[in-house]
Image 1 (cartoon, helix red, strand yellow):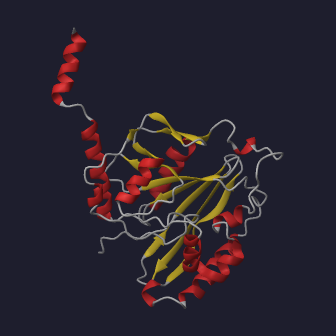
Image 2 (cartoon, rainbow, N blue to C red):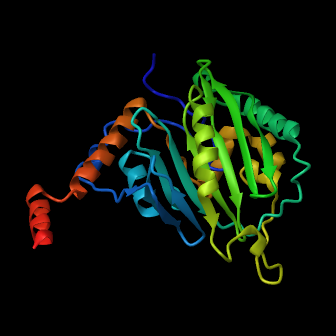
Image 3 (cartoon, one colour):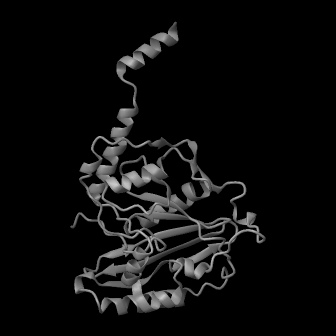
Length: 304
């Protein structure tokens, strides 16, 4: 068994683009992160709040970017937070970003042509495979979860499945929460074996707890002054590039294209990488604990 838990190599818009994350984390030695324990409400930038449940810990946007850098990943600069489980037996991560695209109209909500979207990715990827070494070829195997749009929450959800040249399953899971002026990207980093369980946890305990702030809700859109995005739901699934681009250039070329435009690849976790992140959490908790003598002094003062 390889220790590397592969995730799907995708654009940010298709989920966090997968790769390798360092299990060593030497650059983070001695660094502290401002972990927020569950059971409180946290800000997600200026656009939303998260009612963080007790089974989770949270990092704000700055510390999320710091953690990504320390674990040899490359942040996009748009991060507004990240969520991790307290239970060390669970190995997943949720990255939250906010992208100011302008208001995305949901006119396609009942007309998403999932077959056409999937066909475009398959054809584009097959074409791109002609230009890469055999060991780097990808095959799109289908929808893990077909794209669907919830009119009540204005959430667009999808998960696409693929396999690499070694026939290892790759999967991602994405939710885009539309707001007045853009969208919140919610990306679950998991693995095919645990994706369904982790996705259920995300859907039941995290996403319903994210709320756009007053004035930032989808319904707060003001046509007289707000910018409107140049694309809709189908193109959002395709990274805002549209079906034609995906069909012509394929996944790998799209990665290069978006990198040139400032989009960033984010790396998936090694099995050992999760141990490293847990050690950072535990170290930060210890560092934030008052020293025994301080605690004793406080207790003594309190009794006076």
